[in-house]
Structure formats: structure tokens, C-alpha cells
Length: 118
Image 1 (tube, one colour):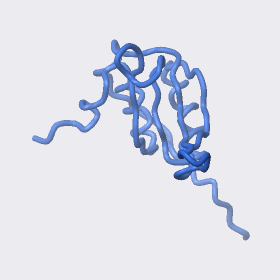
Image 2: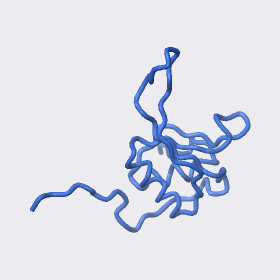
Image 3: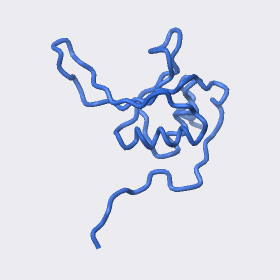
Image 4: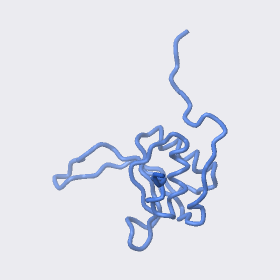
């Protein structure tokens, strides 16, 4: 049996990653924050602006308090952006006590927002 990929994530952010992935929101990076980690608070990187805001909604539905949602760019030594934008959701705190929970969605998770002319 192949181990679940989210087991490799820090325990304090694992449930948040599961919630996002179950909602159809791919994650590219995450960290639980705190001593010995990147930053003070836990965070997750998603792929685009739509996923950023949908992710905030889904995390909030599961009782995971979101501290910030931000769009950021890394700047190289010449003061220029060195890659595309990153979409970061920062949580208010770690959630290690929820690391083993499995989310369940009962409605469509990623609504189709495209419109068609009839």
C-alpha cells in the first residue's frame, strides 16, 4: 500500500492541506511554522488567485482560522521578480490535533464559474 502523500506534511498544517486537496485545490508548498520552520505561522501555497479565495472559504468552513491570504513575488538580487506570483494562505495557528482528520465535502467543491452565451 502506498502511503498517503499528506503524511509527509508537518502535522500542524496537514489537515489544512487535506481540506484544500479534497476541495480540488492543489497545493505546492506548506510549512507549520514556529521554531525551526519557515515563518512564525503555518502556511500553504496554492496555484492561483481563484484557489486562494476558494481555499480561504473551505478552510474557514472546517474551522481553521485564516490569518492572511496574500499574493507575493520573490525578488532576485537585481531587484526584479524572479518567477511568477505565489498565492499564500497563512493560518492563525498550528492544528496538530487535527492532523489525522479526513475532510468530507458534500457539495461541488470547485464550481465552474465559466459562463456560456445562450
